[in-house]
Image (cartoon, rainbow over all chains, first blue to last red; front, side, top):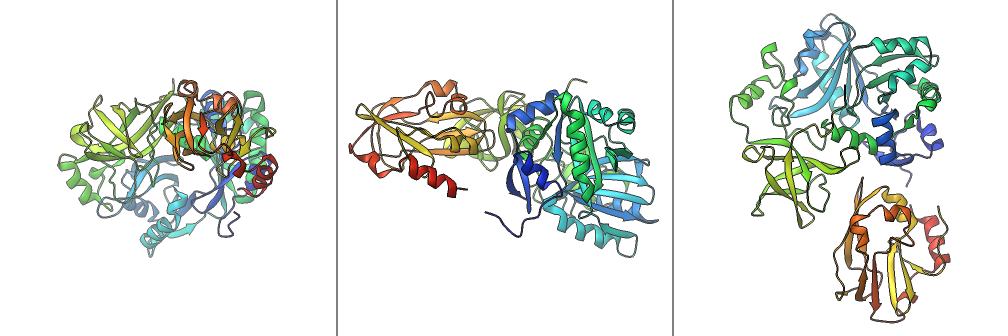
Length: 369
Length: 130
């Protein structure tokens, strides 16, 4: 089932060497798992895991007005960032629909990096390039930029084991980043992630990624590091209630109902989607994205209908899976606000079988500080 | 991958069917288990005495990643159901050809399993299955 239209990251051969099972994902051939999803999930929760996320898009905006352009396209307040700081945000359309969720990095006042989802790369390139026209320089750096995520309680021990520069990264504050040389590879390390664990995401030149990858796996061997695939990435992010674009959020959902109101700063000044977001905030929300625990015998999956006690369809499950650390079957779904209260019982329609579930507090998993 | 037992027949859905003592025991193969990954839930939707038709779903199996249907490889009457799997789904990962048998069927046609693949044919089929 080799598909010539699918692309490979520079780490593809490493994945194959490690026994990774390769699947198509957002136009890429990516490893879904190596040793097993649960095994890799537990490694990230208890030691460290290494992910290839080079498929994600990296956009660069440079110039005197770059800060204005970036701030105008995102819902969070980019102007409160200092050099070397990053933030999570949504980028919305005029109707407040979510175009993508992003991390915005301020290198300097006139040099900004945006990381977007692989599935949205073309769309976000168009969106940012258009806004940048006549205002600042725009570059799609995705093809030259590799990205790996090192996550877990031992992540900084792994970095320290690569050498002095790696050891210094321990001082990095959450959502801050800086240049470093790891395993001889020049890179940018950011204290961010998508697993609910502490750790870093590391950018480097496309062709340098295999050297960086091998250096991290080698340094982390005594700590029990494991290569981790998309499968574990999904269970980890779901336990931490981090949104997945295309599942929990998309252009038909807005940040407020998705529980992302904390990255919407309508008071910051004008930005795309602001008027619609103010209107949404001024009224009671018709629906909300809530956490679900399936108490009956079943697993909630993306797309399954949610029903009230009488069997009426009231919402939809957007993500769901067995949760290895939590030890339960969990999920996220949109329900009417009247049913969003923690403790509300509902039914998940698992392919025609109504299975009991209850609305629960999120995140499902929170790491001990 | 572990060795395929030669004492049974196989289907393209990666199930096995073992005839012995007038009944046919059914389970899933190591290939199926490997594809599914960590099994978290086995739902067997039939009970002893139910009539079951060839190719009809008799339950579902959930792994961390996905849900998969379980299909009856032959027709007949359900004579035993492995209820242990409802509380110990991990048996499927541990011993798919043994302890993790799922149901046993008294076949309507005593020669029903003859139409399924033998171990050699299934081994060949696996080489092409991906």
